[in-house]
Image (cartoon, rainbow, N blue to C red; front, side, top):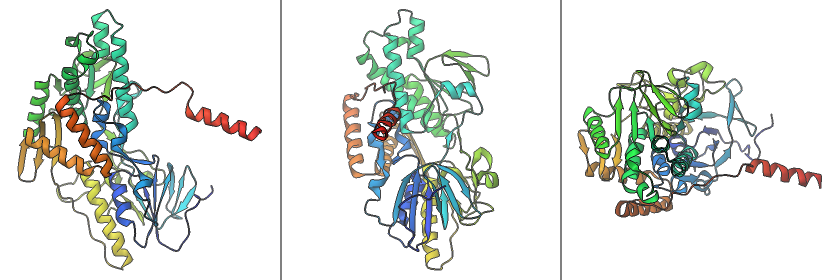
Length: 442
């Protein structure tokens, strides 16, 4: 395999970061303008703000508002190089990675690849359900909802129309709860305007959670309040409801109940994708990589893991930290300081997570917040949620457009983003390949 091109051998210690999510991006930014050469590798050329995927899926925000080009972030950082590639293997014996673009040596390797949707081995659900782990999947969900409502217009049988109109969400974490609230508001305030011929008494939004409560990881008070808010909005919430199968129309619970919908959103769990050369040595429950208090991968030298991928035991977190953005951001900050300490021959410092609270929004003026020493709900929690998420967005322009969208949505309960964009059957790749062949022939 050839080396990745145009990354200079300049004598600097090289830090390779795999993954441009919250953790990987923060680490790269904090190592910019240091004596390290930083190489950031991601399969996409943009950073995506996962907490707002549900607003893209429900036509509340444009996809470009929550995605930011990684190259733009590092335009003025001479020591940072970005490559769009997929990691294939890590050879820790020679400190080298193999990617879809080629191979590259490292002095320090940081894995921040995050996690993917966990279907728990159910192939039918994997085939027919819609996940929510990327901007493209959020767009696909938006398209699916709009396409199904167009199809519902052509059904004279109310049962068949309801199958297109019903939406089932599986997983009562923040994604499921926030998406359920947004869809309930679409049902009451937006969709009837777009589809006045449809009978919206046929439409139901279901939220199924396998455990006994929503928002596991937050307080009982927040869980109960979130469920009460959702029921008030008209969402049918079912706890201790484990989905056993789905064939594209019929959802079967393990207690024998059955429901019907052409739209099932799967947000019920996550799993780390295996990394060849690493997972065989240090993989743990859910595919997460075992790390010590310095985020160094167990049994390996010069290899680190941060964010959702890492499982780190410390203090009250003997089963690992919660897989939330705040953990990855704090780990990235601590690791960046340690890398800077190494340049000065100083000792590394151990990582200790500081829980700064949890937030979830259910709908307009409705949210729950668990803060250190304080628990708030309703309008105050909703304002706090808006502020925290707006400040976390990368790029001033993105923040501005999101704020404008939120203000517009608040006062009008409408948005002009319900556009069904479908690609032609011939892919861009096929067309590009044909053009290259013609050029070569000439």
